[in-house]
Image (cartoon, rainbow, N blue to C red; front, side, top):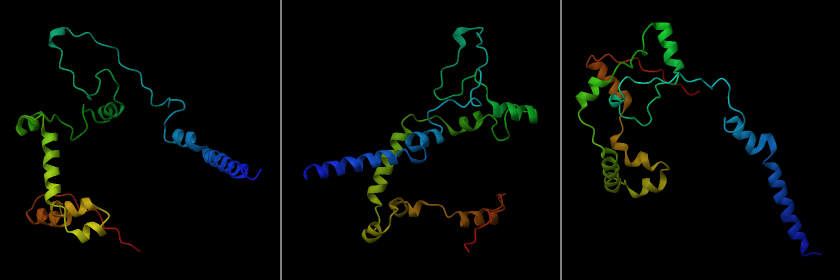
Length: 173
């Protein structure tokens, strides 16, 4: 009878742990609170515009993955258009000229940057003691590459560049 006691104790502890997961909504309650699962939010469901048949099927634009669907409603843009009379919010004018001036897009740029970052990390690991003490190795590796925003703000102001006012500093009490 004594050999069954540890088995019963283990089963009792597992049951208590399983029931503790149900407290305050448990896992399912946390998922629902995060907006996962349950019923859909009726205020987020929007109807689509009717589909349109183009005049010339040969002149269709190339598909752009991740682009907004032309038949989906865009409530924020429509609200801006109805309030201001402009089709797009300020600052979102066509970026075509800027992109054209930047030049052609290199399709391998992400792979090249990742490879260059690996080489940079290998050559700039920092000193041994700070690496052992610091929790943030990124700060140690990229310390010389970071922008001092206060000094840059003052430099631009001294040159006469119109910069927005600096946010107030928070004083610790």
